[in-house]
Image (cartoon, rainbow, N blue to C red; front, top):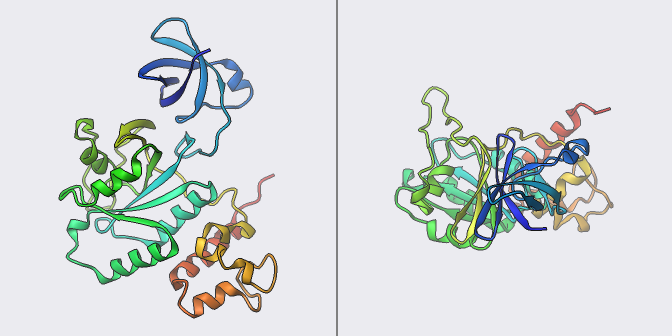
Length: 291
């Protein structure tokens, strides 16, 4: 049976890329019975009745998946945040990072609209902090094209998902990398301070030698499925120090001789990162139990 990769899902159809050919497929009823939904990014086996229509027969095991947006087998997540309009938010960035880290997906932080700033010491400090933690941070501008070559190098030979707040310039970035796409973009609403959703479905787009998922964005940023005991592992600088805590299973709250709290006190871990960690713990505590 032929095999391929789902590169688009729209209105009940799955578009499977097999070499250079794309086959429009439907899912077999067996998937509904087993409560399985094929996702963009899935590697599948299919049969085609002709060169245009077919059916998906099986789905290979996924190395990871996201449900909102629905995409699977992602190599990295490019977290797109604007330097201005809307303003840069470490709280929102850390929320995205935790969700991505929990899925074992490599994050890349991409700052857009750098042309709107005439040098910001505060933003420069944040960039330094995240790089010191070990994150890749790329500063870009779709207007001046600065940083686009560095971003393109990170996209090469990888399947990437672009994620971020509405209006930060995800589609503008892709248009700058591949002008022929002409993806729709919208300006920021002055009254709301945020952009309107311009991407309506998930699709893998060839770009810079890789595949990029332009998505409608994360419809939920809740920490469903993440337990308190697991949260610090989603903060690399905390995970690296956990083994030095006195107590095994330390969650870095009130325990004595906690290596993480010591690092915060000594300025080795940015205080805002630890504050966000505490905030996220409270959210997890308040999460309604499921029965």
